[in-house]
Image 1 (cartoon, rainbow, N blue to C red):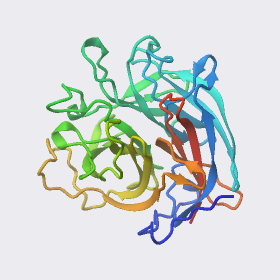
Image 2: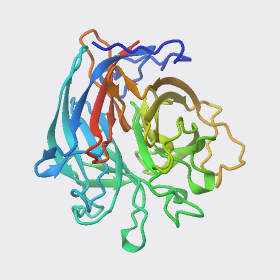
Image 3: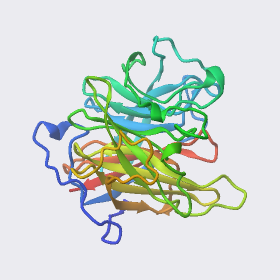
Image 4: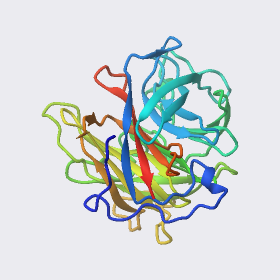
Length: 376
């Protein structure tokens, strides 16, 4: 049994000071107090694994619903390996290890007219998935920046678990693709993160800065993204909060892929506190994964009326480093972590937490699940 504890050197504070009531205690999104995490183990699904004739991979989001089912979104845009889709998974784990991850079902996404999305061209870029209180699913997409009819704007939508479209949330124009140069969203840098609180509050966030909000994160400086709160009743945005991204952790090899860092996912631990996953990549080095506790406080500025965050005065969301995962820990080499979900309660009553890595459909990568025991 591998053991990894958040030590004093890695943690500045305990995570989540909100107690659960009896009814909330059974919800996957219940507020939780966390003093440390103990590594349970990992489980890998190799690239080129096929399910019903379609390659499994690109898993960018994971969530556990109240029925104990896991839902995983693939970021396959279509036009390469199949139509955009999500999966129902079963994850069997205990305090000792992840015993098995199995694919239970594959569901294709539909457009707003409930027509199946095509498999022969790129359309949406789904990145995160969350269970809704009504039994449906919320899915976010980065969209697809391209010329002409291939352009797909980012979205957050509600779907039935059979892939049928239910409704779309209104997204501020500032996040839409314009020209990828002067204003708006940057290509492949939009709604990676999506989370839902126990009371049904919905939050989504872009991965790295909007063009009007400043430069991307770099080796010398961080960046800033906007966390949008959406109203599940009116489908409109309620507020926006600035979340600061750290600078890139390590330099890659000369001439390789550019280094990057971004907000790859968020997980609600209360109505205003979240675990934020920042995922940095350096070619020839690997991935640096940092988990932060981030909080919307009373003093946090609602920036939705600010056209630009460059040189603007505002109070961002509070953030504190919880854990910086090393490139390799006890023979587990971290891959491209993009998803985070609550796991099941363990026999000792403690909760579990699961991270998942997107393999980018690369034979040099894996779909990696890593489980932790949550020590209260």
